Amino acid sequence: MTILDGKKTSEALKQEIAEEVKQLKAAGKKVPHLAAVLVGDNGASITYVNSKVKACEQVGFASTLVKLPADITEEALLEEIDKLNANADIDGYIVQLPLPKHIDEQKILLAVDPKKDVDGFHPANFGRIALDMEAFIPATPFGIMELLKRYEVPTKGKHVVVVGRSHIVGRPISILLSQKGAQGNATVTLTHSHTPNLADFTRQADIIVMALGIPEFLKGDMVKEGVTVIDVGITRLQDDNAPKGYRIVGDVAFDEVKNKANYITPVPGGVGPMTIAMLLKNTLLACKWRERVVSKLLTINC
Ligand code: NDP
Image (cartoon, rainbow, N blue to C red; front, side, top):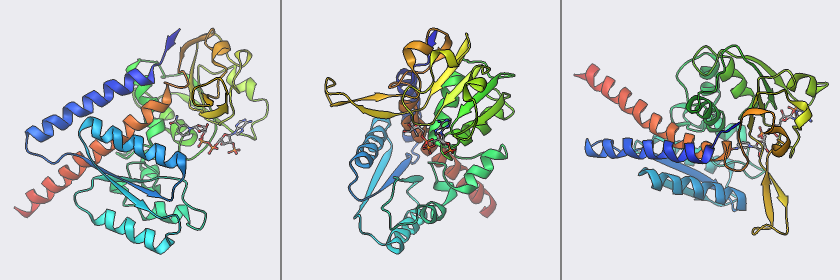
């Protein structure tokens, strides 16, 4: 059994990105610049945004944190989005979710320039993914694909069962794994809360992606020998013996399932760390793609 180590892999990836940034600097080029919009003072959101800003510093990116009050109007937030769209120095940005209840999240995400949408949440990017076009892939499914690639987990001809159909994890990963290409060519079954007898599907799967958010849902008797298991779930369970008073648990009963698995991601230390690394990767891509467009325009103008 091989552990798909997201912590180690994400560190390697960040080092590679840092190396590219050094080369950009040495060539006198602009370094990638990521901005994050944080509305209000939700504790979890602050933690997530801070870790993204810290990751930017780690690899040598420029970063900007746009902190806005919880009572900001939708109109004022849209103005901030317009400013970020127009700011030529910023390659990509994210709007940390959830937003306060009085703001229409969809309206805000639709206002993000798809060319700066490094979270990959804009319908233009989602559509491009579905059509096999160059696009920003949401960081979590992108991270899963990168883990499968780096560990050379075979997907061609395999039966993948994805549990959960969210727009940010389940649905995009089901599209990516069914695409033509090295980490694709799988036959994918996308399941959800209305799927009857779920275990009948998971027992047939060569690869299972768990993204539903119910701790230790996938048990040992729900999988076959030799399965690959990707656990996206993150749930905080109260644990008075843990230093922080809680522990993080995935959607997989790890100790039971690992005995039957060929490959498995742990929680924590699996898909989670890959997510931030892939956000950095998307920002680097945004910077390169913008440079490509600018140099094309320069060539045309000459
Ligand atoms: P959502 O809550 O948006 O979606 C959950 C999905 O699970 C839904 O499609 C739902 O079905 C399905 N579901 C719920 N109960 C069952 C069931 N009993 N059987 C089968 N399917 C079920 O989840 P997210 O995708 O946003 O997140 C899933 C988990 O992944 C969470 O724990 C989240 O914290 C974690 N996460 C981790 C990330 C990381 O970086 N590692 C990033 C993003 C999320 P239906 O559509 O029918 O309601």
